[in-house]
Image (cartoon, rainbow, N blue to C red; front, side, top):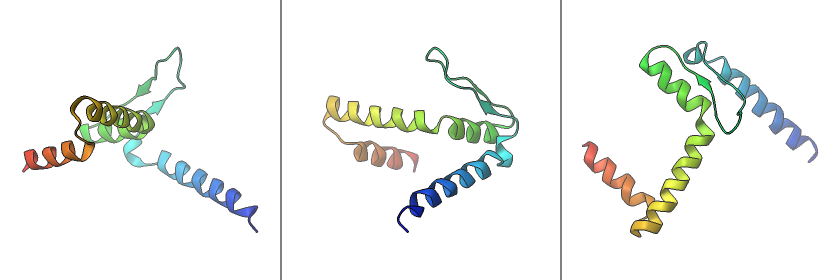
Length: 93
């Protein structure tokens, strides 16, 4: 039984990824494999579509950048990421 769990999870992940790639906001956008350290993405459409496409195709890089910034800010200012999130929340109201 325990042998089937990883297989089921892998298949579920593949189905979710396939469904996401068919999302209407993706339109004709795409991402090419990384080459010489560069990531190429093609984005098109309305501002909403482009924003969605950008987040979809570069999600892993965005997450890594946020973790890096949070770490550097903690090191430089001795304030954790929650301080900056709260400040941004207060600023937006």
